[in-house]
Image (cartoon, rainbow, N blue to C red; front, side):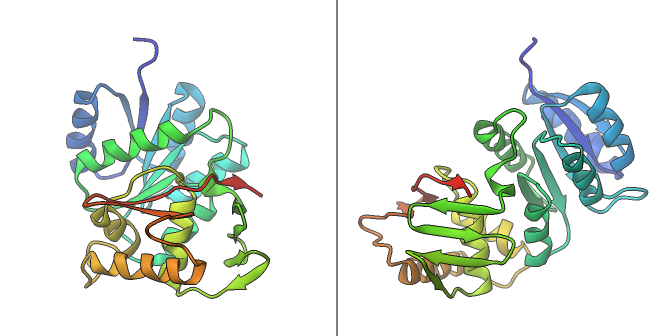
Amino acid sequence: MTDQVKVLLVDDEEAITSSLAPYLESCEFEVRVAVDGIAALAAAASWRPTIIVCDVLMPRLDGRGMLRELRQQDDWTPVILLTTVDASTERSAALDEGADDYLNKPFDPAELVSRIRAVLRRSVVGAPPLSAATRLIAGELSFDRSSRRVMLAGREVALTPRALLLLEYLMGRPGELHSRDQLLATLWGFDFPASTRAVDHRVAELRRVLGDDAGRPRFIETVQSLGYRFVAKVSRG
């Protein structure tokens, strides 16, 4: 099968790769395993995977180091980082360095498969992902990721750190539907003492600050009982 998706799974924990690799294969992916970032770079060069799923904390060369090296080589193979670090700064840094997505450990393997397929749907072969762009633009809304500033119709708007991270995540994945549970786990972390209402509150903050009408959304749409999606067309600045 020549068009089979090739997944490079990078993790130094054999207990994870020994169960996760067969699961990914059962989902009709071709899978190879690397034990650290150095082995992953070698496999990426020789095997040319469709996507890389990589742990962050590893010996020799960690996941973020591997990602930085790939991007410095102008290699834009999609990368999903797996992390146990429950901090918004870690997640923001992952995006800054060119990750396409990130997933907190522990995770449901089915969620990883869903993320892989979502990343591949929005990826353009050989091109940087929107999530790695320095500046995201949606009409009169712009997000400068290097300065962490949001402008609306030429005026800077103030957002809380969590709302800023949520806007960055949604703008980097336009048109994708995200459940409240997914957003909570991804942006807040599994151990964060909050319910999905925390997501709703931050969406409400974004709508209030951006002047977005939930009934006729320009930016963030509520999909009843399912979650949220960013509906405006997004380009890189």
